[in-house]
Image (tube, rainbow, N blue to C red; front, side, top):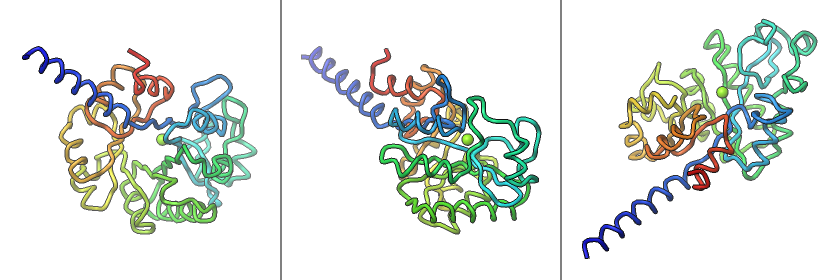
Length: 262
Ligand code: MG
């Protein structure tokens, strides 16, 4: 009888574990770029993320001196041009192409290629700028671009290392989903008081603060974690109870979630 109960308990635990894993959502970090002919933050990486039906395609947005939003990770181009000090025309002329020979995409290019994909959300990172004023201007420009393209709150989730950007997003579009990327300005308790919808933290931070996962769950907030590329860490984060995992290895993560990778 005891053995039967034990077996049943183990089966239940396993089933719960699998159910937990199945709920975890895959966010392709800078798109699914880790394939032949692709590059980080390229249209090709977005297309790949949509092709594998990732929950989200993460991308980074910066702004040129003439107010054009471009998909680019660093504040400078790879040949050292500070994006906020150069016009879009100057960048098109002087900035190198991406590794796969694509031009640096504009946000509009990116939104056009995405085309309201039903499976893959935009995970929109607004990069910190040199002043709060410029960050506010940038938030306004990003929201305007989304409005022009009829992107709904269900289709996009925002992340940023700048807490000012996060708060401005909430002030200007209170229904937007916003998750800070660090705890430098506010820890989760304060984030939630400020109306944030969750957080997106480095996995080492969550390892140190597993109680933040519980706090988020008790308030129905989203727990996202970056950037998890190793299988053992994927499993560790799934066991910790995260909702999303952001990764450069989205296919591997999908296999881990489906239990195809043992
Ligand atoms: Mg990013």
